[in-house]
Image 1: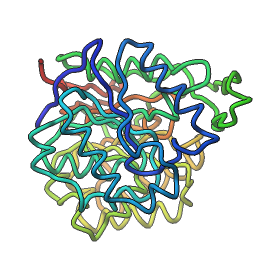
Image 2: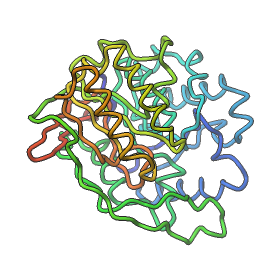
Image 3: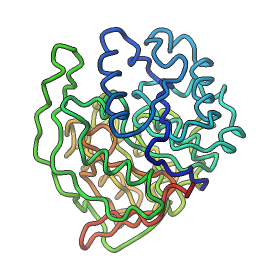
Amino acid sequence: MIKPKQLKQGDTIAIVSPSSGLAGEPHIRWRTEQGIRFIENMGYHVKVMPNTLNGLQWNYDHPEARAKSLMAAFQDDEVKAIVCTIGGYESVRIIPYLEPTVIQQHPKIFIGYSDITVLHVYFNQLGLTTFYGPALLTDFAENGGADPYTMTSLFSLISECLPYGELKPVPYYRKYGLKWEEHLRHFERDKIPAHEFEVLQGHGSVSGPLVGGCFESLDKLRGTTYFPALETFDEAVLFIETSEVHSSPWSFEESLRTWGLMGILNCINALIIGRPHDGVFQNEYHASILKVLKEFQADDLIVIGHVPIGHNEPKATLPMGAIVTVQTQPCKIVINTSAVSQI
């Protein structure tokens, strides 16, 4: 994998909206600015790329311009990291306008989750290590300040040229319900108890490169040239997490069964399951996973649940393409390789 250069104090972080244009909506701009101030207060410069704040309808109408803005961030020598404002649902529309050779020649730290999964997968297929982690609006702009767990996880990975080590459980979760209204900017979301990682099945210790993302975002790529080739999953550690759509358990199960028919569930070394958005359908999803794995004689596959990734705050950042070890006794997820290279 191609590792981007490490981030250091005083570097420039670009802000982009390759999917939804929510960050540019008038009633959301205060939150966009709040997230930018947080990054600046951490000691970094911020560059808001062209078209980032043009709003929802403009973004939808101009996929090529969105791609050009993202390409400008990759080509800008001042920019060391790229943070997405939020996810969405159709970032796939910008891929035909991206320039793969340019991206490979100018690798950058690329951060986002949810629909940004589509771009992670594309960049990973180009050989880049990317970071499935926080977004500007949901994490950096958290009322009362970003969660320390989220920031420590991200900045340790992108600033230090050392293996991250063991992924720790979160101390709490934020209750769903972002305070989008400016008059509520001083109200912090409730914190609820978090769950320790749990071994859902399997035993032992396995390693492999991290692949995955938001399950709904990945699943909609099935049958297209953008879905990862089967060999991508060979001996990999697959991670999946579900979105605020709260897919029905039967729909989730049917999609996962199709992944089994494609051979994916018999290729991977382990499966990491993110806590569902707001914990919705957690038990049902877990039951479906074990049911489908048994159908494909994969009931000895190591499966770890309750992992704080994606649609959770706080969240851990996962370096896609890095080698991880998953073990069951005790239950651990360990990132074995560095995700960035020295300057």
